[in-house]
Length: 426
View: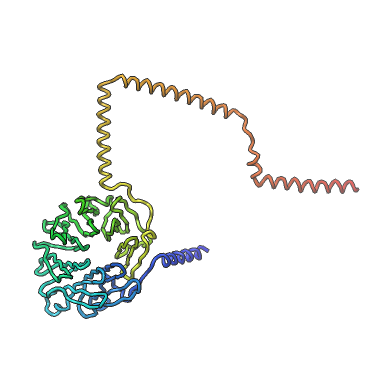
């Protein structure tokens, strides 16, 4: 019986997952790496064969296509609208340089074009709208480049000998982590004004920047744990979004919603109210990739793509009531209030006043009134105890034994009447 119940439970769970979420398995999903999603389009790289290839899939129709399909290595895809970019070594595979070029693919017409000059090593492209950025790794000097697709113009943003990683772009702002000062800090570049800005000045490494409108989030190690911070470019203000003895890593940032990993669990953070909501229904395995598009959560374990409403994964329990900054402010306020109370106590002891005497008299009167009320209540309770208790007849009739007893009496009476009748007949 228990075995059948377990089987029924498993079937119910499977039916729920299939009915409430859409699951897409790509034809070449094996080895799905570096997954990126924009709207209904997904792109990733796979080494199903002997080399890395770029695959594109329309998640509505589930049509999957190898858009490179050659014997060379194509890696690190990025997608925006109808365009996909990646790094490609097809023109350098035989010269031993290990260099890559940047290629662009148009989803609508299926055409591919190279947008770099093949004279350097260009890697890790990102695209947003008609702006493409990548790392110029020629001679080991990792410089940030930006390309205007409409103007066909390339520009170098950084000129220092430094290590640059983690490019992010959202159309008007470019962000990256930069080690020019010894450790990694977050830098941004305003595409319209051409101004560069250093966002962080911490003593540790600030890593993994993600952009959303006028905000940027990143992670930094704090007291032995990685925490997430946010910078608002409009307000020119920094806010700490996470706290506690857990490690945090930002995964996706859209609008006010931040999707992050907290010690192997997915967590949804509201960057306005700074509260966290734990997400479930992923089992014991942390999704390999996770994305947010409005209220839709998209995730993958590397073998397919799952999507569903964020509400289907949400636990309503709020993991913390106050933000780290609010907690610090509360502690400071409490310390100030305690200090003020101590000063008041000292002053009151040193300078007794008429009001102090009155307050003492009032307290005495209150105590006397309370004692009188207490005595009255005690007398009332004593009287109540001395009253004879009424039998609860209703509770007697609720017992099944009373009915058994009545039945025995009735049966005994019937047999008694028959017995006396027989004797009378004799």
